[in-house]
Image (cartoon, rainbow, N blue to C red; front, side):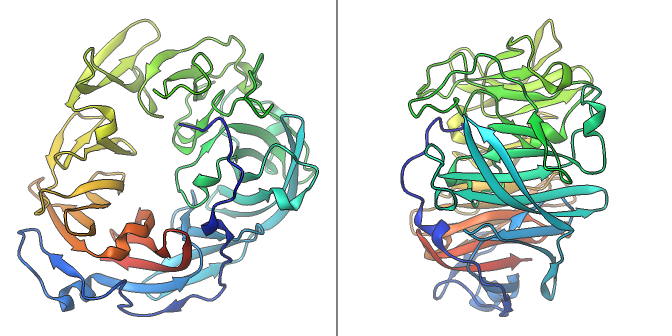
Length: 433
């Protein structure tokens, strides 16, 4: 859940500057002498492991996803953004459509960033960065990540913000999210990319403040998932406003926006949910919650009047990793579909493997995990067979401890970045097949 405060030091790995040239090095494997098994638990030689690496590329910053199919981006600590496409031959830089200096007021402080944006196939994506050393007058915020997207087309958006130059500006002030593909945005503005004029998107009345004097960061939170899932005249969002500022249980509610994107009635729509998952369906909003004794995760649906239990998955929520509409129980390496309730064993040969982060393809047929074992950190590449079962490969290496920015490409390859140390240093981009 979104932190309600920002610590004083910018983490060391953000201080690394981006190299502008990507050198493609075939089979530039992390570490030495990797240990490898196939889906049956048999050892395979290093040659087979090397064959799994489509290419690798040394870089000083992870490659992050945009919302544009096949397009990625990098960002430096001084806020310079570059866009790339990915192919078998490596990365190709894509020229930005433009850039715009955007300035907004947050908690009575002026945050400003240059946003580099790209328009392609009807999709707008732009990114920028504010850090404290860019403006000595800003006292509360040390970091703010800017993202601009198409304004979600819902009936309540004012006509003035349905122009081609209109955008929705999202701001994340948690620096630990810098190299995370799944950010949480606690500030939202409608902006005009030509004039720079902005107005609040979720108008929030009576917003409480935290111990810094800033508006609570957990008061109205959007994710990329709920924005893409907008329905009709409203957008779902998350809030912890009815709970203690430092609630260790991280309790959340689902809210529904009102007229002009505003939260006019200040009423909760669904109370006490698990994680930041909310999905519209033709019969109501789907969400996650614990059962009565907190021994299982329930998939529930609320139609505005009644809550219906759809499915139940054994285990406490902190035993699961969620990616999109899927959950993985890290205790038994079982994949669950939130939408259908179906379960699948990933058939990982090392029963001691425990996933720590992961990414699952939208169709649920490919799984990319990084985790720990009794011997070494490892990655797991899983694919669904024609009969619906999964076959998994596991690769062990100490360097995988510092693996981040997982993705699965449109052609089914596994993309990630491995850092040299916990603090960052040299990064290497890997594409596994």
